[in-house]
Length: 390
Image 1: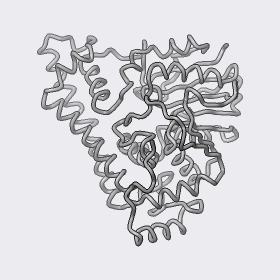
Image 2: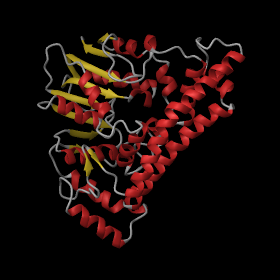
Image 3: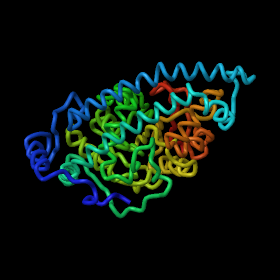
Image 4: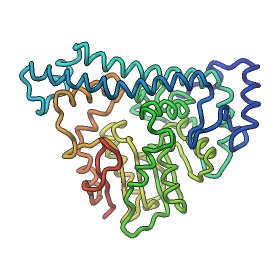
């Protein structure tokens, strides 16, 4: 359940007055909290100290992702060879884990990566909890405003499979009332400083292949999180009605705040991707970005069926996620270990289930004509789209 708003740490009365006074004179809608201006599309986080911390953590992550990872990968290759394994052959996850997890170089790489992630989440979460009243007020004000609709229900029954702390984000997407704010600024660290202007989502939206008849009147982004792809789809197709749905009320509430900040007319709703509540055949395009490895295999199949249901004949389903089936790389010892530790230590609870599923085959079983030979929307991700034929 969501944390009760008054159970959080509150700012002092003096601090509250200061922040609210700043909010009243800044931002693009009444009640907007914008303390330090913007850089392009990015609203700067509210504290210079926190921004400096995140700048360090983001750059440190870049080093971990590159130099330290390369050292770990080289070390893994040496260990595999010493154990008599072909470094290019497939290895079971558990075999790889046993082989590498106690090596100081490889374990040091994993520990450093995870510690960076924990520091990123913790410092950001502390800031929003310490300034809770201001950001509650911002969401409350935005809830009532347009352009764009917002629907959320504090009494919605949340499936257990969605309650884990994805990427070790404290509270996950449903258990902290500021999950949207925390996720937005924390994910900037994930991209090692390369997505401050939503560059990744812009590239994906640009790569989306519309229906052959060219008609795009309605678009659905499932698992929309903080709404970055939703916004980019609207900017690519400005005349379309665009919806983003996510299980997390805090996610869609923040997404709506940001849409108002940017003046973009999109709609968000707290709904399940497997039960969106939209009519049959309502959409021309259904898109998603890194949703499916965060849900169970059973839920994935239901979501594919739901995407098929809400698409009109000839409509396109365009899911962007890690490759599965024939597109998946050989699980060499190092690759298998990378997937395993991400599952074990980064709270990727359902990732192994996802990778074991041939996603393209599941789409075909549910009435899609599947194309796996499209241009890649994002490096390291699969190439996959489906057209509704039945």
